[in-house]
Amino acid sequence: MKQACKYNIIRFQPYPETQEFANIGIVLYAPKSRTFVFRLLTANRHGRVTQFFDTLDKAIFQNAVTLVRDELKRIQRMMATMEKPEALYDELVRPREDIVAYSGHYVRFTEDPETTVAELFEHYVHHSFAHQPGHEERMKASLTKLLISHQLAARFKERTLGNALYEVRLPFVTENSSPTIIKPIHFCHPQSKQLLNHGLQWKATMQQLFRMKVATPEQTLFTYKAPESNAGILRDAFEETRIQIEELGIRMLDIEEQERITAFAREAVA
Image (cartoon, rainbow, N blue to C red; front, side, top):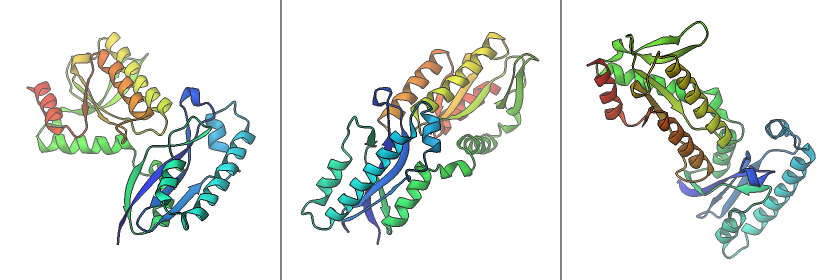
C-alpha cells in the first residue's frame, strides 16, 4: 500500500552568500512506517561539484560529505526509538545558512521508500532526465500537435532568421517579411545561475534579431515551462528572467495555456 513520504534535497553550498548550490543527496521520511532513508554522493565523487565551484578545494567537499553521512546514519539509528521521529526529521531539514543545507519539503506517494529515494537521487543528483528527450524537445512536440489540431501547422515552419553575420534557427516561424515566432523555452534547471543564463541568452539572441529588423518583439512568443517549485531561489530566478524578457516586449505564456497560444498563432495568420 502506498504511503505519503516527505523528501528533501541535500544541497552543498560552500558560499551561502551567493545562494548557489549543487545537489548532492536526498533524505526521505515515511511517517506511517517511521522509515528514514537517504542517498548521498560519496566523498570521492567530487568532480561535478568542484567543476561547478572551480575555486573550491575538494577537501572541503569531502569533509562536508563525510560529516553529513555520519549525521544521517546517527539520525537513522535514533528514528526507531524516538517518541516523535517526525520532529527530528523536520529539525534536520530546517532552513539554515550552513555549507550543507536542505531544500523545502516535497511529497511523494510510494510503496517502497528505498526504491523511491534511489530514483529521486538519480533525478536530482545524477540528472537522469538528461538522458531522456530534452524539455524543449518535448515542448516543441506538444506545440506541433497543438498547431496541427487547429490547422495552423502549415503556416509555422522551422526557419533561419538573420544574415551571414548572425543566423538563428527557430522552430515555429511564419514565412513573411515580418514573421511571427513561437519559441519554446524551459526553466527546469537545477541551478539558478543556469536558469538565468539560459533565459537571458535567448533574450540577447532575440534582441539581436530585433536590431537587425528581421523580427519584432510584438510578434514573438516564448512558451515556457517554469520550475516545479512555487517558491525559493529557482522561482525567484525564473521571475527575474521572465521580467527581463517581457521588458523587451516578448510575450510569455505557460506551455499549458493552450487556448492563448492558439489565439496568438491564429492572429498571426489571419
